[in-house]
Image (cartoon, rainbow, N blue to C red; front, side, top):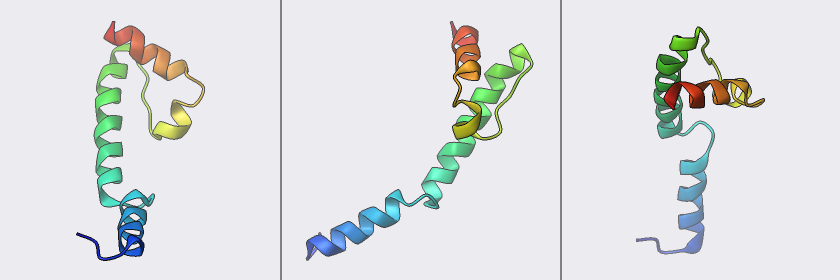
Length: 66
């Protein structure tokens, strides 16, 4: 348990930081899963944020999954 709200806030900031280890693991896992499916339509993603931003690869993924 946290003795202060400040201690809680510091832990939350650390967990939500862009460099948090669990985020990198989740990103890598998601990218591999998406690429496994997009391979069927001869495309892939390298960076989830930029490659899915315009929605085209997301639409392709949705079509492959349906």
